[in-house]
Length: 213
Image (cartoon, rainbow, N blue to C red; front, side, top):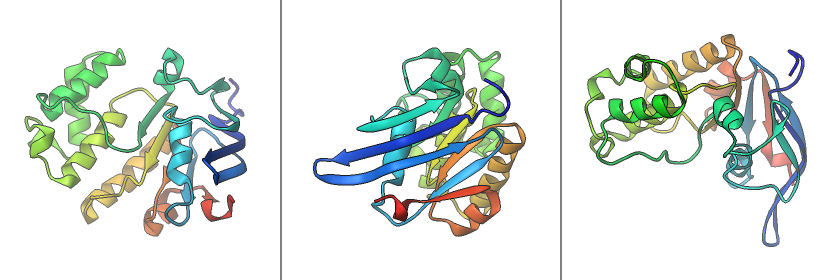
C-alpha cells in the first residue's frame, strides 16, 4: 500500500432491508490522517454503513476495502488494522475495566498488556474506575471504556458510531483531543455523529447520509 492509497475505500455500496433501500451507489474514500464524518438524520443508514465497514453486516452490492483488502473480520490483517466502537462492546461481567483492557491488549499481541491498559485508562480519565466491573459504571464511564477498548488495540482505521453519547462536556473535550491525536498519528477516522461542534472540530471531510437514497 502506497502513501497515496486510501485506508478505506467504499465503491458503489448498496444495502437493502427487504424492500427498503438503506443506501445505494455510495462511493468515497478515507485517507490516512483524515477524519471523515457521516452526518444526517436518524434512520438514514449511517450506522448500517459502519456495520458494513467493520464486517458486522454485508453489502448487497458494491465493495468496501481496508488497505486494499476486502472486509473480513476474521482475518488477522483486518483485526490489526481496524478498531471500532459500533454498538455496545462485549465485556466479561466478572472482569474489571483494567482486566478487560488487558485482555484486549493481550488478544492483539501488544507488549506489556498491563502497562497498555493502565495508560489507556489514564488517557480516557478512568483510572479511578480501573477496578470497577462495567455493570457498576455510569453510562459515561461505560462509553469511555468502550473507547478505551478501541484505543488499546493497533489500528490504521478507527470507526466510531456516535462516540459522544453519554459524555459530559469534559468528556467531549477529551474526545475531540483524542480524535485529533489519532489523525496526527496517521490513523484514518470514520465517524458518525450528531454533534455539530465535534464534527466541525475534527472532520476534514463530511458525507451527507440524507442524500444516499
